[in-house]
Length: 200
Ligand code: NAP
Image 1 (cartoon, protein in one colour):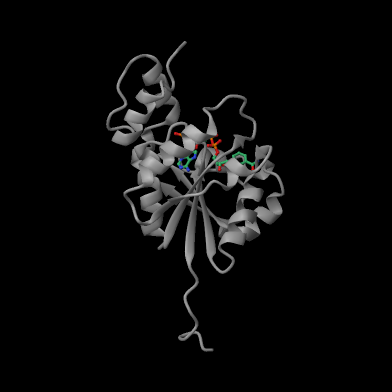
Image 2: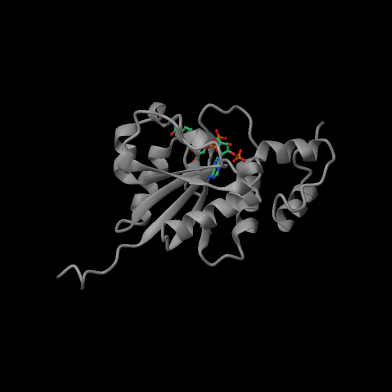
């Protein structure tokens, strides 16, 4: 088979995050990564129990908000791999599971630059590099500056809409401020229906 006749390998984005809640910055980042890296599909993977975090909203709520937020886009999907695995979530396990699901694809792990900056401390980091290319997304002026990352393995992507943050969305809800237009409409309604992020 010549290079011209070989089938093109699929290119799959894996959007890893806590998504507590998912917001429009995440969606713009995924869409931008899809265009810039020519991805066939972006699979959102809400973390199970995030490494180093004691309290996050129930995984099922975060999963359903992610499904609601991505439902209208045929190029976006959601995976439960991290939610269904026991114990803390490590990216090495996410990537091994996604490699099994997409054995012949090139994988691109998309997440916040702040999270990627900690990558050298991640479990099995040497194998992590072999499984995916990393796309570190940040708001303008906060690009990834960390030494020791393999140049081939990580790309930076500036996304102005990432001025929105999950922490800010949670704080606004707890203080009674609206999150319309910061998160998708269906997510606004889901948060209200399930009384999420209200201060006790
Ligand atoms: P985080 O520390 O809560 O987030 C760090 C920053 O990145 C925040 O500003 C966050 O904004 C942003 N961010 C997170 N996910 C994003 C995404 N997909 N797109 C754009 N911005 C994003 O990070 P986290 O959510 O817990 O973890 C992110 C991913 O890294 C997850 O898949 C997690 O499993 C993985 N991770 C793995 C290890 C490990 O293997 N040891 C350690 C840490 C993280 P928002 O709060 O607005 O999202």
